[in-house]
Structures are given as structure tokens and as C-alpha cells.
Length: 109
Ligand SMILES: [Zn+2]
View 1 (tube, rainbow, N blue to C red):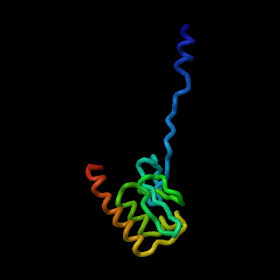
View 2: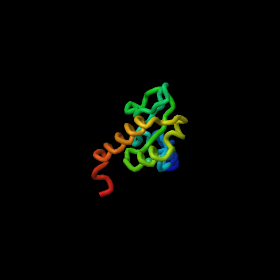
View 3: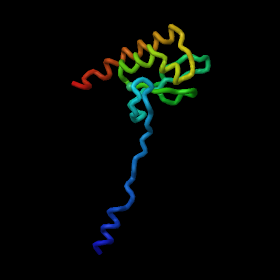
View 4: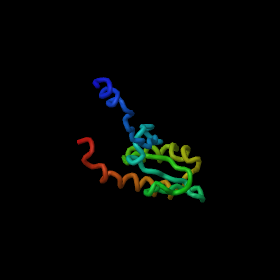
């Protein structure tokens, strides 16, 4: 009887499969839900993909302004997406990154 109970407790644990992605700026691996997807659209420009479902080559950044700055001011994002950003496109994304401050305010306090 005892061994039966024991073997039962060893039944395979259901492991939730969590998709993980790497932030192109800090290289930290996080669950996909904690990252923001950027997608290269057909004209080569980069958009924030809030739905996570847009077609195209994608890269991920943390929802932290610091990562957006690293990703955008260097060429990491462009490198990851194999594109080059126009000045306007880059500014637009940097602005998006800066707005993220509000979302994470309170974190790390
Ligand atoms: Zn990051």
C-alpha cells in the first residue's frame, strides 16, 4: 500500500510551458508576457507590437526605459531585427520606451 502511494506522488508534475524570450538590450531571459515585442514590418521600419501577433521579424525588450535606451541608442535592436531605423522611427520608439516609466513606477521600491 505504501509503495503505491509513493509512486502516485511521483506522477509527472504538470509543468506549465512558459514561453521565454531574451531582451535584446540586457540579454535577460524573461517570460514573454513581461517583454514588449517589436516587429519589423514590410517597409523595414520597426513598430511596437502590443498584441504580440504581428507578422514579421520580432525582437523583445523589457518594459523598462533603460532597456529601450540601450536597445535603441546602440544598434542592438536594429541588429536583432536586421534593419536600420530612420531617425523618426528611432525617436518614436525611444518615446514609447520613455513612457514606460509610468508602468513600472513602484517597481524596485
Ligand atoms: Zn531588458
